[in-house]
Length: 272
Image (cartoon, rainbow, N blue to C red; front, side):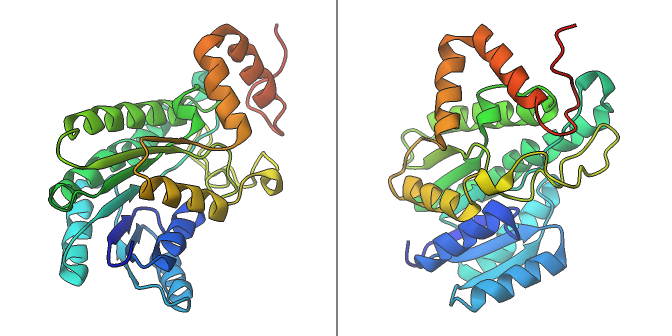
């Protein structure tokens, strides 16, 4: 990884920040992006104290022009791009029947079109350097989650895009990884959008029992080094993907019951 240049979208907190530290500690030069300048500056300051070579770029991946700025500033500073980690993302939690459709559009703009935009502008450099494109997806990209229809749709779309892209680039030496962390301790649930677009606030799940962002980042780093195509993390994540493939009806009930037990669940466990 020494001397490689890695762009990490949404890199100022959670899994993105952990990835910046993990890749940077192995010798990569890091570019993190995000929409909050204060968070970006704080992250850069903290990681530079660990001797990580990095810069920040204020960029919203859902805005096409921001991705061009991101690429240009990276080339200006480091001269190339070897790795793109599409990590920027947002979640939502509400029943579809109660949901303002603008919420789904916002989630798709960031999670799916953000990945498309960033990949499009980084692709020439990554092809030239036979580098890696990584998408931070979710188990929700394999198994639709009730109460999170927009989030699930965005991750299914991301995975289809990455699979098609991987096949297009099969003979160009480009590595494409779809990483599905499962439930990981991060701030994504606190910023989840409710049916009216407001932030959820407190996470409905016990974050202390989840895989840490740092542990998740270590797995993604190893999968990148090995140029794996898929990475599915956590035992529950692996079981969910397996059972959903062969027993979808059973998993409908299991998934419903599990998520209905969350505090302040948007739907009831009642079968009425």
